[in-house]
Length: 133
Image (cartoon, rainbow, N blue to C red; front, side, top):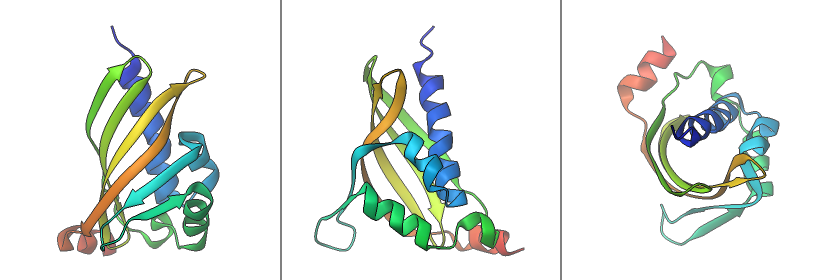
């Protein structure tokens, strides 16, 4: 049985928990140090290295401390080999619902994100109301 899907799912727990808790050290366990995050959501290409991402996470109030409800979803995992995968996930942070494409490699026995491409839409109003209750 191919255990790699379970390994990837387990690795993505650090991704979801790290963003929800605002825990940079937890995020460093899943992101490779050479990773970049890309978006063109508002027009021009934005290319952030991990130092910029970690500074942004450390500088904002984590969703866990504001009582925001969680929206964490693994939409799909597409493996192209024993050490390469693409995970499509959804995650809510504040008023935004992100769709992320995470390119992952198994390096030294661990699944790591080596690039992330993302976009977002406003978080569904019902989910925001539920979080406030």
